[in-house]
Amino acid sequence: MVAMPKKSANKETPAETKAKGTPAAPAQPPPVRRDFLKISLAAGLGTCAVGAPLCAAVRLLSAPASIKHTSGKRYLLTTLDSLDEQPIQQHTIMDDKQDAWMTLPQQKIGSVILRKTGGTVRAFNALCPHAGCLIQVGHAPNPKTGADEKYFYCPCHVASFELDGKRLDTVAPRDMDELEVSIEGDNVFVKFEQFTFGIAEKKAR
Image 1 (tube, one colour):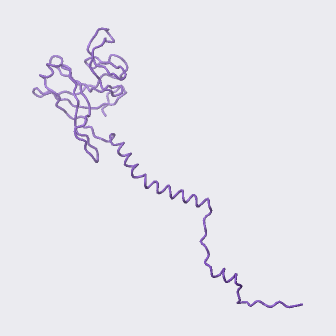
Image 2: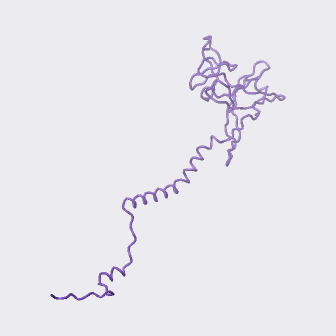
Image 3: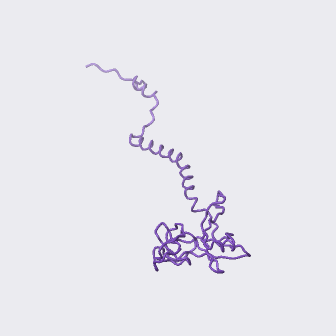
């Protein structure tokens, strides 16, 4: 029986020497985890790239809702002499619109219909209380009498009103919205206000 030579306790095999001298490679995450990290990183970068323009766009689109329309302000619209010549007139209200970060000079904020009968001047908001379309003046058969008369009507949903603002049908939920008139000398001023559409109550907004 041949005795095998004893391996020295301090002597390493070539394979052991190579394994000991080579740094261990960093652990790699499982494939599924790597894919998740890539997707998360891409989503984060996409959010950074898109987030700022998106916020700006949302702010721009919401700007009209935050614009101050100067409701309740008095405007000089015409004179009594002018109303004597033309008793029914329609006037556009122009004013600056302003919000938290910009001013839009001389924008249309509304329209007013004036009517003078005798010594009385009345004013109405020209937006139909039904859905906010612009009321016009025209001749047509009166829905109540059948006679051809001048009256106010809304071309959008065919709501009609008498010249004193009273509704002639039930399309609109209420009469035309009357505005406050004040006379100073020959000048006619109107306190312009906006009202909520589609409800029976005349509610300022």
